[in-house]
Length: 440
Image (cartoon, rainbow, N blue to C red; front, top):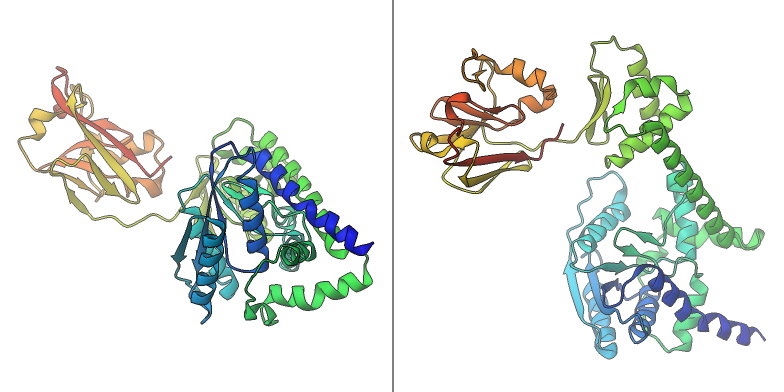
């Protein structure tokens, strides 16, 4: 009877994967499976190989990410390559450099390097072999770190281009499938190292929980789903509180309860790519806003970004790249600047007179202070700092803008305009300028 039940459960796996693909993929899309050579990814690759022969008609390939951390890494790569050769699946191996500078140990550093490499792969989808036991481990890890509802929601079936078709399947079922089909896989000895936190949970804690609590891993995975629903509802509440505002108004935070304001600030930062590790950071910034004078601009570092108040709104300021103090223009259509780009298009109707700037050396420079600017003929020039302030350009942006000069004359300021003397009034051949990278 038990053998019959096992046979039934593993027979259901192709349908589990097929239904996941039907929910997300369009026919003919390219899916690359992350193949490590271990049990989970070998089973997933085998299931996907079967699925590509169904009406889904996906284009399948596999990739092995070589972290270079194990002396067996090349042997695992060869095993993956042989599996793909046997199944006629295109294969590639990508070496990565694991840099341990993120404060989350070797596991976290390897995970970052792996995901960065997978994100760069030219494919519609990347399939990962996470399963239900992984989900339970992730929930426990995040809870022990003091996570909120987002972290407690653990993993989801689809995140961007990443797909997890086996997230509802227990690992034991994958093992039964592999043995039934005679699949070969490699064993990573580091998975027995209980000094690593995830291994400790997998090898020591979860087996004990399963012995004392019926279906512990299954219930933990189910709880993660409920946490995820809660996180979704909190995000929807934050969207309602923010409304149609592009920036988060300080007045909106002040009218909300403290918990609701913290929730709105959390999601606002998350929407801007900021990872909030401690709720105390949110409380501290909200306190700064509550006691700051009306003309003050409180600022706080959260992660690697600045969160600050400017003109009664909350701004998220990412790290700004360095720039040369002077960048000569020699006819290029694009010039890099501060992690962004200056776009220069020459042709009829450009705002800047091509004839006039052709008489001198054109360059882009950082602001030094004391500049004056005259965008309108018949009106006196004014200090550039006044123009920048009136146009609402934040102080941290003003000193980073690329100012265009012809010899020693200031002729263009992003967000402000073109100097009157150099404006192309007649519609002759000129230059159109655009700066992207620093937004406000």
